[in-house]
Length: 225
Image (cartoon, rainbow, N blue to C red):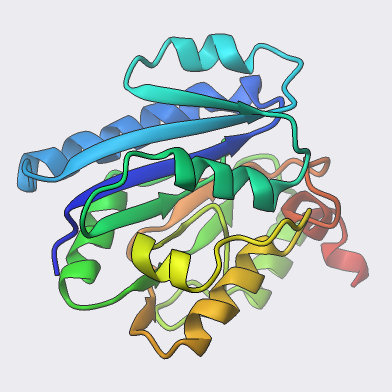
């Protein structure tokens, strides 16, 4: 079923360096969707969690984005707050990404296409952006082949029906692994889902991230694990 609306949710904790690029990419994806499916309303919610930098000023430059301010320091709670703050509508689809990530132009169009085919959960791929040395990039590629039916789960690139999210209990209040935990619970419900490489996102290759043992930690330890 074609979604009745789309809510993009972006958690951010001191991400002033990357937020403009993230929101610009989301805006491009939103414009592409509205060219093909103008009846689908798209909202963008940025959840500023314990920010002490200029993140709020960056978001202020994107009037289409609404802001939710929290002081959790726990990404699972932050993502959940953004989803619950998004304007609810019948058949709402939740598109998730991260503040240090640039999604492709077809990001929302592809999710809506797959939702119309009956999928309640869509898992996209993620690749590290510039700055990762050749040896680690090669190791990344060997461990994470970019293809359909992949095994990647990234909060920076996934979408699901809001109804399924609520039935599964939402994101748990976890500092790391909140995406894998939720996806496992959604899959346990037996809903149709798919993993595709047709909406590949680019995330920062920084080695000091916001979540302990998160993506940056994984990149930093690629050659030692």
